[in-house]
Amino acid sequence: MKRSAKITTAAVAAVVVAGVVALAAPAMIDALPRVSAPTEQATPPAAGHDDAAERTIVPASGPGDCTSSARIEIGSDDGSVMHAALRGDLVEMGASALANGVVTRDAEGEIFSYEVAPGDSLIAIGERFCVDYVTVGSFNHVRGAETISPGDILYLRPDPTIPFVDPYSPYNAEPGSSTIPYYDGVAAFSTAVTTADLGAARWLWQRLEKDMPPETAAVITQALSNEDLSLLRRMFP
Image (cartoon, rainbow, N blue to C red; front, side, top):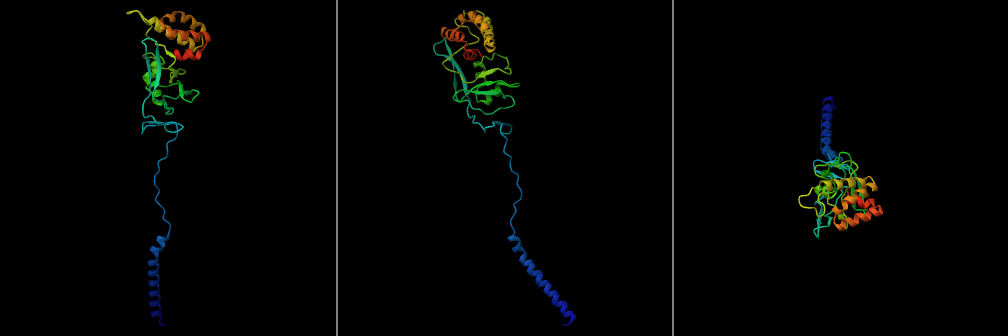
């Protein structure tokens, strides 16, 4: 074969091979495994944090369900002895920067009380437990503009069988009479039972007893006799 013929034949063969490779390339590419492009995935929020975007608090045990607000109602059926009762359900929504205290539960595992931590806010505490903070303050004798302090115990689940002590209005007060001595006496009695000073509590009770409804006075007198500080602290938080 002439040299020119050999060159021509080689060139044709090269073109044929290139064409075969080109035709096979799409099939080879289709046979390769597909790799999806990476996509961004949302990282699930850590437990026990404030989700500012959703305006919710996620507790360490999982999100709570605060669909409605509970409240503590205080009233009297007969116009004299007052009682308090919880209306609605307390829900633990988890600690937050302004409600980071310790929760105590009763024998049935229900939320019972809360110990105030440094920096706590009564509003945030109410939000933590899905309860109206104003009624929590009233039930716990948080007086006017007074602030709560670290170590204070806030009772969240009243016992409707225990009389409520009104810290402002003495029983059968004369119209126009000053209620300041009574108000100060209730505050002093509360301090005495909080510090377990039963001697001071008994001395103060001699002056307060006449200002209480008879049923309420009987319960307090019996609690002092039994040295039942737990009951006295619930009545004089």
